[in-house]
Image 1 (cartoon, one colour):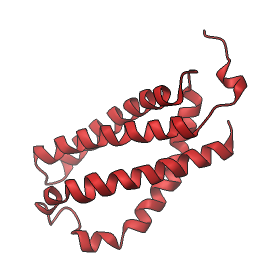
Image 2 (cartoon, helix red, strand yellow):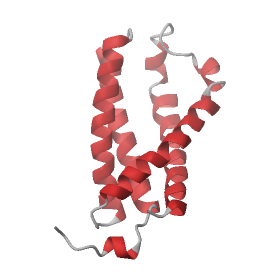
Image 3 (tube, helix red, strand yellow):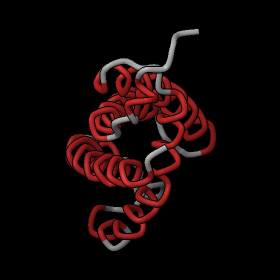
Image 4 (cartoon, rainbow, N blue to C red):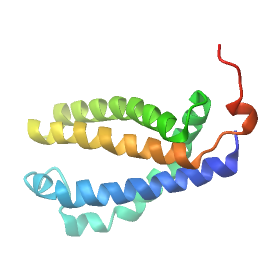
Length: 145
């Protein structure tokens, strides 16, 4: 595993995740979050907490890239990343949306938005990871089992 590429892919995926999150969660879904003021921070208050949120994403992302590197099967970065992102996205989106729906006072519509938005988010992150993390040549040429 190449640690320089791992860090580069983690940083790139964190940036992509931040851009996606701003557009989808910050702009497109903001009015849905505002329907639950006792559950979610209002936009003004939430801004103060974004640095810690992004730091947490940056700290967690190398683990995701390491999982990608361990599961790499030799295809193109886009295809491998999309496959990986879809698997991670399905897992995280369904898990977090169902747990949030079961434990928070949110409606079914917001839970469904979380599933769709989360799945797309992680497919995009997976593609970014696949594009940036390039396995070594020896890893790319391993024989199929």
